[in-house]
Length: 158
Image (cartoon, rainbow, N blue to C red):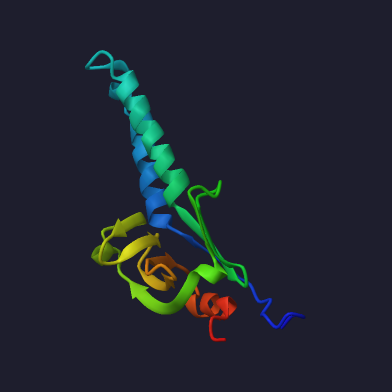
């Protein structure tokens, strides 16, 4: 506890989707190795191949890792090596938090999803997650490696 009676414990964890990284590298390597994509048999394939390669790069940079920090200030979620997209939830906006288990197959995949029933999902793999219920009633589910530690760092009990 610090001087004003709040906890100063902070949780920081990272989830990395290694199977997706391997898949993206394999697809990109396949594009580069296959000379037919660049030389023919169809003229003008350079632009579509470049668009596909750029799309793969965006997927790799935004949905292969997720960094989550929880503490007295709230929850901060950042995707990829550059921290984008980024989601912040101030401690005073969180009404309740709970531990849940998420299945990628049940939620429709990895990344950023929103559904009316489940709310906002920020997950990269199946497994443990922290579900936040905000003061406005919205729900946010965040995939973390140690949801119990993340919940404890939020210190919502008082």
